[in-house]
Length: 313
Image (cartoon, rainbow, N blue to C red; front, side):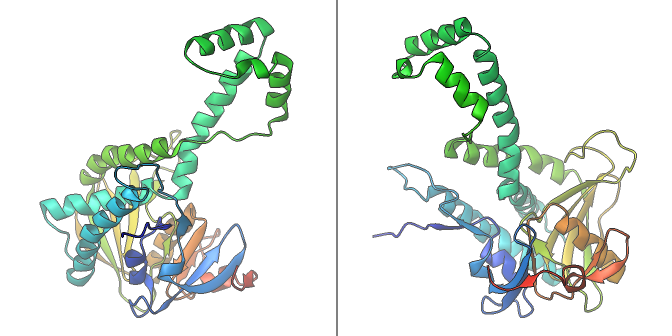
């Protein structure tokens, strides 16, 4: 009997291993959690996961059908990444498509992006609720229409009770699991062609300094400091960075050209700053990895976060 997987990694264990010192599942990562303001060490299998994150009620294919599908895709993408790190060469055609899908996937699947998906839906839902409750007549009209569409038990809640419930705000509006998973797949399908149109350079750390990973490893930033618009995957003058392992990072723009670029300490620090930019958690094989602080100075992560608790949460 197949055992249902309940431990769902949003940053794959096999990918995180590339950021340990020994590139081994037995080695430890240094983790910094911005929300908890804590640092600790853990193996890759014990970080970047949530219980039942991709769970779905599907008696035909099983509750972990998406987790298994994601794991299957990871098993295709990770050998491509390891080959790039070994040869310092971008792959051809099919493998390049797999690589770009993985970069898109690592943007779409993480918890922060789920929150981005939910935010406009929550705001719109609350706006609709407020409009519905502007008058008792409008509320009764909506209730009547809902009953005609098969809704039940609506008579148990009065207009005044519903208005009070809405005003107190003691409720949450969330995406259904089906909507969340569909958004992941749709986002990957939308972003991947834009990533394929970019020119990708491979930055290789030329010294002992290492690149970090995070729970938001696909970073998108604007190169135009005076831009009045938000950065987008299809927008010119933007860069997408993606760490491949502790020694190599992808750097994609529309204006550049493919290249292999030796990265000194300052470049490593700048890219690490981007990888950490929108992250809740940072993962590193070495807490001495460089990062650019808010003043543009190069410091190590343990210097930057040296005043937080060094403990296990």
